[in-house]
Image (cartoon, rainbow, N blue to C red; front, side, top):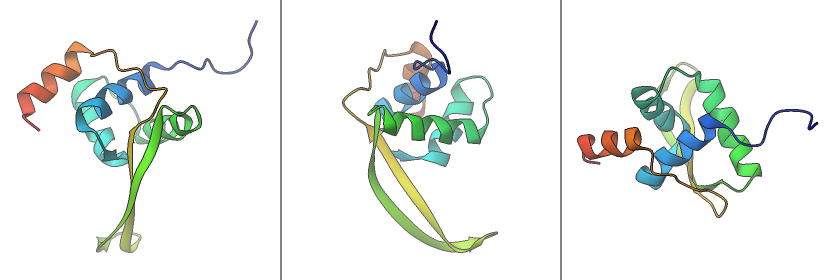
Length: 105
């Protein structure tokens, strides 16, 4: 019997589906799209799966941007943009496809 968490994750697979259509996006943007399409999930869970996906080579960092603004934590925010990597296997989920066809990104 294997110990620990299973490698596959429905949440991470859903993030792969979203990134397939977006090509590149930062964590909060992925989170907003996720909760529009799928049942509620925490933002912390999305960031956990992005980090886990980096380790499994399902995601890779495409760029890191610093944006100026008036945020509660200061005047600058760092946005890490993710895209699909070699181990990502999109399955073309119907809900995601329908969402992005409707939104016309």
